[in-house]
Length: 192
Ligand SMILES: Cc1cc2nc3c(=O)[nH]c(=O)nc-3n(C[C@H](O)[C@H](O)[C@H](O)COP(=O)(O)O)c2cc1C
Image 1 (spheres, protein in one colour):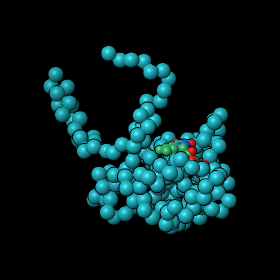
Image 2 (cartoon, protein in one colour; image 1 turned 90 degrees about the horizontal axis):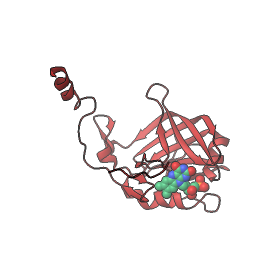
Image 3 (cartoon, rainbow, N blue to C red; image 1 turned 30 degrees about the horizontal axis):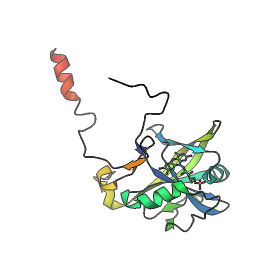
Image 4 (cartoon, rainbow, N blue to C red; image 1 turned 60 degrees about the vertical axis):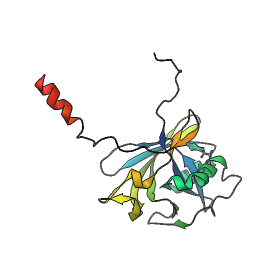
């Protein structure tokens, strides 16, 4: 039997990333889990919901650039810290060893196995949050998390964020091949 929970967002768990920006010329990182894949063509766009009160918000708008860093489970403490304290009061610029690609105001974290350089494409202005739409310009991935040239979630070991129980979760094992395991139903329905 199902229980009604009200108009909450039930899409969790979602990927936890560290959004990197420059605010007043200084690198800042914020934990962000309200992140979305917008399309799969070229260019590739992603979205983020960021509270207007956050320090990150100003940096992204001023520089029209940011980085998306995917921490593995080893960085759970540092990631949570970036979601607990604001760059408005605490300097987070020295937390990580950084590197840069071709996008000047997109500081990337060496310890994160996957980092993306993005430029700001659009801002949707909601009451409390800005929805940032970013264009992915480059992806930097550690060889150790790749399998056949693709990012392997089992090797990446991402942190999944859950708003309901307020926990970080890990991935379980793969359960099937996409665009493949369902083919067995085609045979059954064709036969029926
Ligand atoms: C796991 C986790 C996920 C979060 N996701 C978001 C998010 O998607 N959007 C948002 O505005 N804040 C989110 N936050 C809160 C910000 O990370 C937090 O307020 C942070 O201190 C803002 O830093 P800043 O002021 O330096 O930008 C999240 C916090 C945690 C711990």
